[in-house]
Image (cartoon, rainbow over all chains, first blue to last red; front, side, top):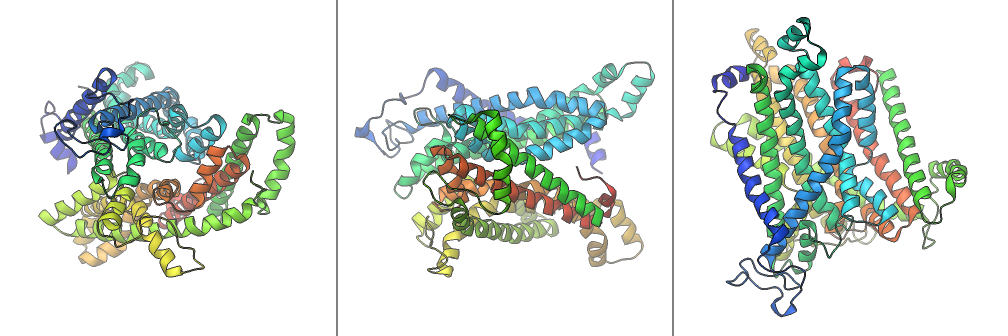
Length: 281
Length: 294
């Protein structure tokens, strides 16, 4: 059923979920990148005279308990979310993707990969973060390492499954029979494989964003002079009844990031299954 | 079947041993003023033996860790169980309705289920405090009433934290159940059974349910396992004196003995959950019985 409907949609048209995700990520990334150079107000100089202001013409979304502009803090926090989540993903990909490719090529690797996966699952991000924080003191770096450790196995598995799923396709077999080596035969399906791996990366990005905020909230991640959405939530908790906006905004931003990555993951997966049946784009 | 159970359990115990050893060696070798490889190696086996006997040593503040753990587990275990019960009830109810109904209501319920999966449990906790604690003033916003003083009030103080853990999981359960129910209707065995003249309820009970159960355990299993570490964050949000607090305090003060014991229990909890799910899946899907436990 689903194959029929997906074949009916023209392959040139874009996945609507992917478009929406691109739009959301685009806006958020621009906000975060702007924060590298410029924020509406400086965020490192507390000004108790304007602490806990309601939204107004000077501070559009108000100020935090230390009198800092909320929009500026949110932009800085967003930047931290992006930087930490992506660095963890890159670290994990350096190890995970080659492991997945090797396991897909040689079947014996799969058993080892499965063993490593269940072993690594014993150290969920927070467990690893506790271990690293005890050893070296909590910082953004220990949080990144913990997130990377929890990303390795899912990325490797997704890579392995993506390669395995397309290796048995007719045209890959045909290319191999035509005398092309395994590597060159795989080139025919590289695009859908890439989309599948990217889909898992997008899902993990959302996981990392939420986990970084959680780790930072409990004191295992980014430490105070730096900025993070988790720290904003932490600082807001004592003022919750009086200033609910301080709790609502960072959480809303986190949720938008997670929704965008879920949309991207879904869209990329759908695109991979279409790409697989029509051929590489 | 017995062979499969034995292999799965043995594999889990091996993993627990390896995981515990890695934590112990990392912490003891990395600690400032550590004893070096020889010294740590010599201490490992006696430590492990004591651990298995339930003797976790003493913390920096000279408190017996075993007693500390028991106090903290009395908060964390009920929290996790409560959360799983809530998540099961909400998730299955929501998913069942979304899978059965048609039209706008189904779209709305499916949207609600998918939306719940996107909420970080940290923020769900804060939102619940905001709504039920700060605005409506119905429920306590944090802290814990000891079981010995008033069991009813203890449960009340666990209600919001459990809900915070449960809602994202309920979203995963609901959307998986809904997708699995729709997929079952499209499946060949469903049409074949219809052609044989079975009625809808019978097909569902005899053919669709095992298939749905396997898909549920596959997809929901990892999410269930995540409630164990998730509890650490939720405990912090609600100022609950649970395992999470103990572990985090141990990490900030560099109390290695407490962290070792805490991480051991965290890994044990995770393994109990994942092994339970594995065995449950095998119970439903007998094709797995002959496979080697990975």
